[in-house]
Structure formats: structure tokens, C-alpha cells
Image 1 (cartoon, rainbow, N blue to C red):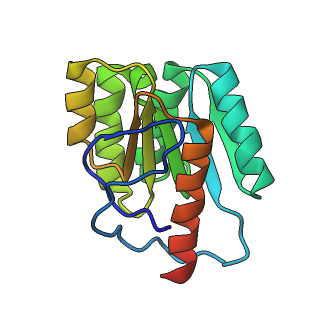
Image 2: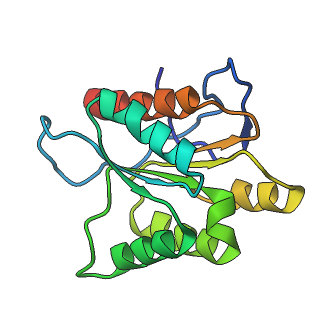
Length: 165
């Protein structure tokens, strides 16, 4: 399964897999093939964030979890600076945790790092948040009832598409 750029919100069922993909993402800067993917998970629900980290570690990803909005905003802002932190190879964000200021910053971040796939998740949305999520230039949005396995499958698909492209 190859997950490509998806701009619309994808409502997930617990037994479904990510879909709704279209387009392709720009090529990332060169990196050694043997290097594990560096993933940043921005999730304020500790159980979900650490559960996702544990799943991704099993697949040999390097995973950093940011558990609060302030830390997430700080990290995104640092990665926008010319001499800032190197961006991860994959970013997974909880949309509701970021709030509107964070989503605006994430939008700028996505434009600055278009080669980095972004998975935006939110188990608790409202029509306004859902509409905002649809406007973001992220690669995949998992909305409503998604399982951690859905996020893991999408992350694996994105690495497979990187290896084969």
C-alpha cells in the first residue's frame, strides 16, 4: 500500500486502512538508505502517544514524543529557523492539541518542509476543526475513530514509498 499526498479528511473505521491518497510528495534531501526514519509524534494523550511510539519502535523507527502543545509549537518553530533543528523524516500530529495557532504554524512548517510526510490525527473533532484540517497541506488526515494500527500502517506505507521511489 502506498500512501501519497491526501488533502481531504479521511474518516477512519477501526478496521479500515488509510485511503483517499492522491498526488506525490516532493523528494527529500539525500539521506543514507540504512538510516532509520526519524519520527516525531506530537500527542498530548500520553497513552496514545507512547502506544504509537512503542508500535513504531518495533518497526525500527527512531521516535520522539512531544506531549504538550507548548513543546510542539516550540519544536515546529525551531525547525522553521534557518539554523534550527533538522526536521524529522515523518511528523505525526494531534490536530486538536495544536489548536488554531499551532495549525497555522504547522501549515507554514509543511510549506517549508514539503518533502516531510505529515499525518494529522484527531479523535475528537467538530465541524470547524474538520474544515481547518481539510485546508492543511498534510499527507494524510485520520479523523474520528482511528486505531493506532492505522497510523502505524500509514507510516510504514510512507517509508515503503520512499524506498521504492
